[in-house]
Each structure stands twice: as structure tokens, then as C-alpha cells.
Image 1: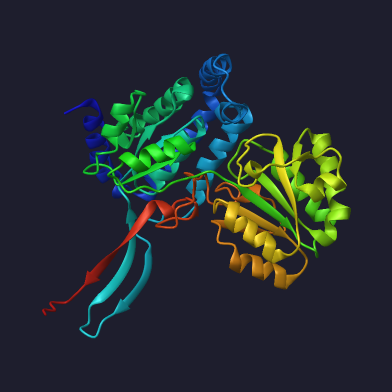
Image 2: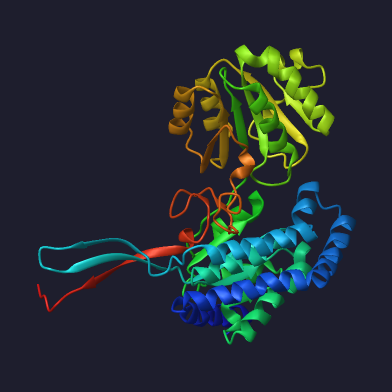
Length: 414
């Protein structure tokens, strides 16, 4: 067996242990890990600093640097995410529905773990903890392949998790880590469908396409986020302006950040100058259509490439639309099925937007930044799925399970 195959088999064997582990035992592991994230923050941040120094010297992009960096507050949020997971009901064994047949058979549909989940991700070292925590609570082993830019951070975090597993007399292989960056080794991993049940790539277009082309394992993709906010004719400006501004500025390098503002033409003269001033004051570059540039001298003229662009930077596109239907058409053409929002006080407009926009999360009168497992009360998420099969939107505990039938009889034959 190769090293990759040995690790994949070990993860499969560990998944059998986790599948029947009592809820209390899983929760104790997660609470212990949450406490150690705080206690060991010095060592974790020191490891992350090594990665940051190399990344800065390598001219890593602004977006990747933001995703790579760990802080004390982020470590505390990661710990809180684990505690949220502990507080959530254990999905394993949940009876989704039950019935009785004419033959007297009792039929139940029951949640069970998926098995072994492979995560291939770039930058974000917090994914190491999030993936482990969610997979463990859902009874799954995880096989992690982080990016080389986060090598020290991921090593520190995964070793912390493996240490907790050892102390609780559980197999360390509940979380296996792939350290090599060799593409041939990753290709080999993607052929291990006899051991791995699901692969989730989180990163840029090139990574997702690579996994899509080479994987024999079922895949749920977490693709780019081209997120929109449509400001309706009946929008409350006191809501619209802070929603649009903070949806870009609060964390510009995340996939749920706002990339394009669509403004109803009847509100453009009022709102475009107001929004552009707020953006300029916050250090955001606005790239607008002809109407936007006429109303705000600070706006740069947008090109065709600005519609549908995921900037992941302090840049936002802005367009004036004639109607809610034009806004929806724009989102359908240029969006990525990730996150889109409407600001309006008109119930009919809100309902039309909800029904006609098919993104994984649609929000009314709220920031796109809320499409996040932690913010939606799911605990730490494993990612935001833009695949419609199996899971769509933030992947929490339920999305890391599947359902099977349990049938109880009393001697029936057919």
C-alpha cells in the first residue's frame, strides 16, 4: 500500500468507530478541543505567523492573506463554533419519518454518517478545526488536505485534534492529514473511492476544476461567491446603505461578501451618491455603469468583466436597473448561486425575489455576510455548497449525513 492508501484505509476503519460513538463521548472531545484552542493559542499563532511571513514574501494575494491569517478573536470564534456544535442535537439515529405498510412492516428513514469525508482546501486554516468538529459530531472521519501556504498552521491545529483523540482513547485516524503537495499524490487520493465517501474542494476555480476532472469520489463543490444586493424601489435607505456597505467592508475576502449592488432606477439619484460616498470613505473602489458614473464622480466606469466578478477585495460593482425583473435577470446571468439579497419594504417584491432567485441562500433586508454556518446557528460550517445535489448552502451537521431505511418485521415473507 502507498502512504496515501494506508491513511485512507485508516480513516475508513476509524469511521466505523465514530459511527456508533455515543453523543456524550463526541461532545467531550469537542469541548476538550475548544478549551485547548484557547490554552494553546500562543503556539498556534506562532505557527500561523511562520505561514504569514512566507506568504507575504511570496506576494500572496490580499484575499488569500486575509483567509490565511489567524487571530486570537478568530481562534475564540473557532472554539465557540465547536461549543455550538456540542449544543446541537446529534443527527445520528434521528428518525426522519416512519410509517407502517399493509403487511405490518414498520418502516423508518434514519440518519447515518456518510463515512469518510475528504476536504481539499486553500489558505483557510480554520477549516481544519471546523471540518474535524462537524465531521466528528456527525460520526464521520475526515481526510484533510490543506494548502502549502498554511502548512504550519494546519499541522499545529491537526496535531491538537489528534492529541485530544489520543487522550479520549479514540483512533487518531479520525482525522488524517495529507502533508504532501504533489499533484500526483492528490490524484491518487481522488481515486480512493473504496475508502472515501465524499470529497469537498474549497478554494479557487483551478482547484475545483482539478478535483472535478480527476475524482472518482462523489463531490460537493464550494464554488466562488458572486453575491448581489438588489435595492428595490420600496427600500428603506436607512437599511439599504449599511447593508450594502458592511456586506463589502466587514470581510472583503470571504465568499459571502457583496460583489455587486443593483439599484432601482427610481432610487438611483438618491442612493447612488450616498452609497458611493460611504464606499469611498471606507476605502472601497466603485465600478459603475454609465448611470452610476453620472451620479457619482468617484465611480470608475465598469467593463464587461466587472459583471460576474468575484473581487474578494475592496472593490464593488454597481448598476442601475429599471425593475426588480431586470435585477433578477442580472443575478441569473452573472451570479454564482451562492448568496443574494433584496432590500425592500414591499412584501410582494420580497416574495417575488425569494421565488425567482435560486441561490443557496436568499436574504431579505439583511447582509449577504449572514450566509455562514456560525451566523445561522449551525455551528462551524464545513463550507457553503453551490452544488444542488445532496447539500445546498451552508453544510452543517445534517448535510454531513445520509438517510437509510430501517425496516422491522414480525416474520413477514413475500
